[in-house]
Amino acid sequence: MTDTRCGFVAILGAPNVGKSTLLNQLVGAKVSIVSPKVQTTRTRVLGIRLEGSSQLVFIDTPGIFEPKRRLDRAMVAAAWGGAADADSAMLLVDSARGIDKDTRGIIERLAESKRQVLLVLNKVDLVKKQDLLTLAAELHETELFSDTFMVSAQTGDGVTDLAAFLGARVPEGPWMFPEDQISDMPMRLLAAEVTREKLYLNLHQELPYHAAVETESWTEKPDGSAEVRQVIYVQRDGQKGIVLGKGGKKIKAIGAASRLELEAMLEQKIHLFLFVKVREKWGDDRERFSEWGLDYDA
Image 1 (cartoon, rainbow, N blue to C red):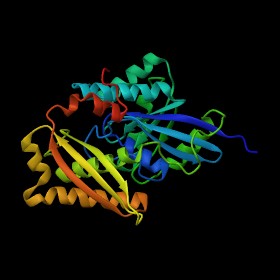
Image 2 (cartoon, rainbow, N blue to C red):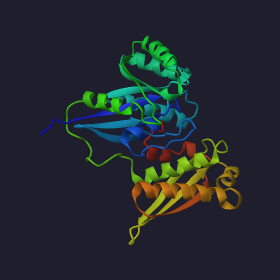
Image 3 (tube, rainbow, N blue to C red):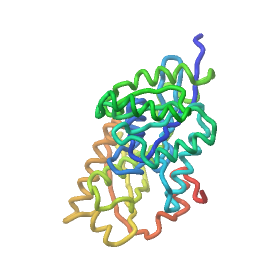
Image 4 (cartoon, rainbow, N blue to C red):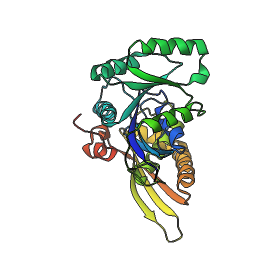
């Protein structure tokens, strides 16, 4: 029998460097929401990839930034917790953006931990080769990185080599998840995350982070379909109107986009019902933090 390997790999980085896109590319399916907005990943998402006889369990951590609110603090704590628990860690850097303040802060903290990590330069298709080499050389001066990979999470270029390298490095041991499992995220939470992504994509700058989505009920029907009811929580009455849109057009568009994606993911007919409620301090709601796997007291 072939010896198996299994290990956790944390994906660290500043907000909006492409961590969720890379995770989805590594897993070969969508397990983490993707949005042009920063800080869209609120919780640690586990994505699973089989690489030969190795099972790679990826932790897509929230972007690490200077926290200002309770939710920010909990997200940053979750990111560092994910790094500490993992067998391997990689720092994803946006090659086009270079070394910004958030990335510099992550490097400083990693240096304090005396831990070597992989350097993964993302969006290499957008940067000249010489500029990439200069950036890589500057980052290696920190003596923090054991190896460097250059990838495009968007196109998948370089991702196969990265996965092969990780597959050979994780510890020997039995697989922790069934062969066909690609994530440990509960379906109700994943469905809420899909709707939250569509909320961001449809509303652009109108409703930055003042919204949360909760799957209230999930009912399997005799015909094989499922009825899913979700609540979108906003903090003020004015925001409710933004989500609904004129004549309910916005929420219909959000619901239709979410339903189509869920049906494709689950290969199942979905009847999706969305409701909007005002909850002024949902960002300080202990129950929400527990649902997201975040520490309220971080």
